[in-house]
Every structure is written in structure tokens, then in C-alpha cells.
Length: 355
Ligand code: ADP
Ligand code: G6P
Image (cartoon, rainbow, N blue to C red; front, side, top):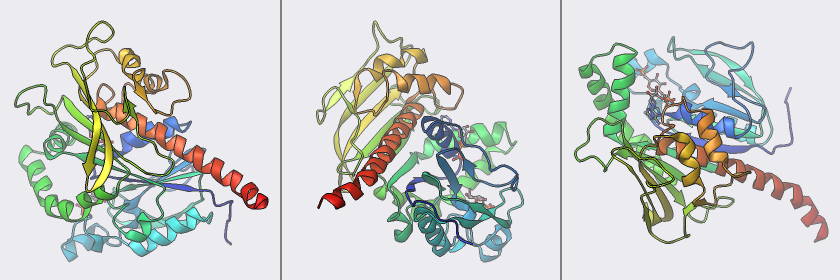
């Protein structure tokens, strides 16, 4: 039988290449929504789903139509649309949005096979994360908000080396080769989705150190689309102005190479956007409160909430720089969006009755 709830699910899309910090972002996001999301209890231990009271995160790899062997035989990568079932993705995201539970397939990352499906009930907030949340127009049109994590090639390389060499024993050459092999499909199918994103977090090498190639110090941009319903971009000091700010001084400790913020209007794929940028890293995370107090429109519920969230997850990668800061801010903006959508739905019948 069909399980039907109220149908108030909002759907968030998070796109990025794998190994680019999606799961870290998800942990920050669900923490802001009021509780860590966990794998479903008593189900397939290789499930990719995460569930909390409010939020269900599904991984779009589950819509692979070709398993690892199938991809090999056909000579296509996981990034290729031909390896993915967009019809099913659309049907199931639509059903969940309408309040109907679905039997979602599971792509087993260990075996590379498709496992028997798992039951997903409609949550308050559904996050679809993976390679293609904004690729298919039908799926894209279901999204209430979309985010693209744009990790520049240099930084992606540095992160992959960190993880695959240190933790998985891969060689430098093999890491280079695997990035090169993915690049054409990445450029063709993944990267173009950023034009549709309501918010883009762009991660670049620092400009504070000349010719830096370590990829440890980062310059991070939060690109926020103007005119998106229920989303008003964050600003620094004065909305719409162009600002450059070096906050180092009496209230903020900055060792080499320092910290630099920038804010201002810009254009991105023909859309008007506001861009907030941070280059460098914090020495003392608790001093982030000084920066937080200068930001506006951050959708916090109390003074210092961003700093509190960042301190709570100080052990997550990126907590001392713009990646963690902007992921936390996007989390707060999505919570705000969710609350506004819910409030508008609650008052809609009243408005109709009045008319
Ligand atoms: P994904 O879920 O997209 O595969 P993860 O969140 O698991 O990515 O991150 C993959 C790896 O990338 C981490 O283990 C870490 O080494 C690195 N990483 C992710 N986010 C950051 C960050 N903000 N700063 C530094 N390294 C990061
Ligand atoms: C991407 C996809 C995964 C896939 C991996 C390797 O990261 O998100 O689903 O498993 O590529 O693909 P392969 O075809 O080598 O197993």
C-alpha cells in the first residue's frame, strides 16, 4: 500500500564531484537542522541514506542504472548520464515531494552492485546529493534550493592526494591518472550544473601566498543568486556595496598569511549574484564571533550561532576556513527557507478562505 503524508517535503539538491566534501557538508547541514543524521536502523549496512528527525539525505549514486561491471562493459563512467536512471530519479523525488513513500534502489559502493531497494518515507526536508541533482530538468524543477560545491582542480588534486595516498595507499601517478580520466565527463556533465545553483561554494588556492601549490590555505567564495524566493543573500557591512576587509587586529588573531574577506555584487552565468569571499584561515576558532558579528542576513536564531556550530564541529575538515564557514551559513539559510515555506503553506488555506 501507499504511505501518504501531508506532502510538505522541501527538496534540496547538492551537487559535487565525489571526494569534494559532500558528506562533511551534510553533517554540518543536518546538525543545523537539529540533529545528526544516521544510517537507517536495521537496514542494509551498505545503504547510502542518512536519516534524522527532520531530514533524509539520499545519495544519487543509488540511481546508477549500470553497476560497476556494466559501466566497464559499456565503457562509460559513473558521471555519464547513460549510467544513471533519471526517469526513476524523477519519479521517486516527485513521489516523496508529494508525500508518497518509495522503494529506492541501493548502489553498493563496496561491491559495485545494485542491492535490493530500501523504503524511504517522505521527510520534512529531503536532500538529494551526488553527481547529478541538477542535470535532468524534471528533477531540477522539483528542487526548492540547490547548491553546487565547486572545488578547483588544484585543490581537488591536493585533497585526493591527502586521502588516497595517505589513507588508501594509491600512488601519485594513479591519482593523477584517475582525475584525468574523469575530467572529460566531469566537464561535460557535472560542471555545467553550477549555472543552475542558487548557491555555489567555490574553493580555490589562496592568493595570500604567492605561487602556493600546497592547497592547505584556501580562498573560498560563496556565490548567492539574487531573486530566489525565500533566500536573501548574506552580506558584509553594507548590502550591495563592494567591500574588502582584513579583520586582523585587536579582535582577531591572524598568523601568516593572514585573513582577507571580500564582498560585493557580481554576475555568474548571466545571473545577478552577491559574492562573499574569505581567503586564509582562523587561528582561534572562538574569535570567529568577531567576523560573525559583522555579517548580516545570516538567519541565525541567536547571537553567535555560526560560531557555536563551527566550534561544535571543529574536528570536521575545513573548520578553520571559508569552506566550513560557508557550509554552516548555507545550512542556516536552508533552515530559514524551510521555515518560510512551512509558514507560507500554513497560512495559505487561511488566505484562500478570506478571498
Ligand atoms: P565526498 O562525500 O564528496 O566524497 P568527503 O566529505 O568525504 O567528500 O570529503 C572527502 C575528503 O576530502 C575528506 O576526507 C578530506 O580529506 C577532504 N576534504 C573535504 N572537505 C574538506 C575541506 N573543507 N577542507 C579540507 N579537506 C577537505
Ligand atoms: C563516482 C561515483 C561512484 C563510483 C565511482 C567509481 O565516484 O560517484 O558511484 O563508484 O565514481 O566508479 P567505478 O566505475 O570506477 O566504480
